[in-house]
Length: 459
Image (cartoon, rainbow, N blue to C red; front, side, top):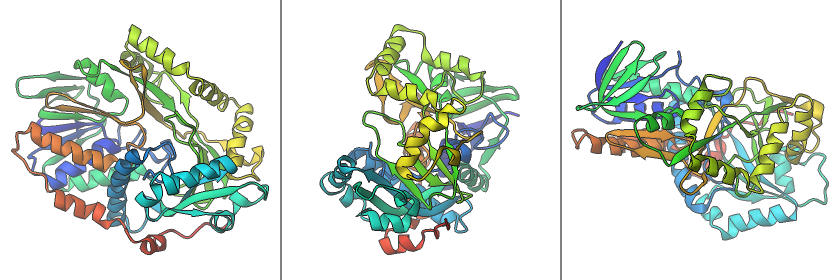
């Protein structure tokens, strides 16, 4: 098993699959291969149990600046449009209400400022502030048992896309495989990438793959491979494993809490599972782990490769973990995994969303959660709060922490334009057809969007 291709994409998660779909369907590149080390597509972080199932628009993510929200919004609308077009039977996604909940005077005032003064109400026309009565109509358990004197406000929208990113990834690959120019190889690990006079050679156990242009979309491993080729020396990773707690039939949609300032991790939220609305997930927790994949001891050495064992890396970690907000957060998250103690320590976060929940009502989920790489800038000795992309000589490395899945098609569109530059304009990208298949199917009208929301589960 080997071959000669114009383009080889390494990684069969949603990042690599979205690029495969975009280049296969909307460019005239002659030959494209996708190589995935696992036996099936979307086996690791894109698997639906290993992520928050959220399509991030930036409307209820309160750690986003308006500028970041503008960029994320476009990416989310591309993917939402794809789902509306290719998943009419809701096998890959569900459409539900979502909100960010402010509890108490300080949080209510923060949401009011965000909506009225900071521009989020203008950027998101479907977003609206709602009070206690409307919150209770949409999410009865959020209000039930709560002190009636506690101020309550939510910013709510019908654009609550809950996504099975694993199924979406497989859909991208199935669409691409309709083209005769595409080959997909699973169970094929790339052991080494070397530069040659014509492009790159990718060494695998089943033979070499040669290509003019390569894209590495292998999550945390992307930086590892980049460093082997001499790129990304000023970068390291802080791998964070997310976990969830499960309850039964507590929420109809997605309810976020306000983000802790200075933290790159997702705010604690509750939501109904994409495939089983009777299951409510609360999380994610965020535990630092010295591995690039959860539960795989073999990837500890991969993390050490990425870490670098140099003064800049050690000083960066020390500077980051010494932060008076981050360090207590990290220590608390270690506690959540302790049997018996963990769920009682996590319970106040759940009760902020659903006040009536008791410790016996939730259990730590087994087999849920993946590893999200947080980018460390070793020159600035700080966390980089965004995605990382390294563009080299006819090669791209994508490292995609949240919201990488939400913006996967936007990222793929941007990478496709870069690839065409690599090919010296030998090929073309039909952006109009790409947009017609994706973002043009996103419901813009507020009433139309509300009609598409799945009916709430009964409590």
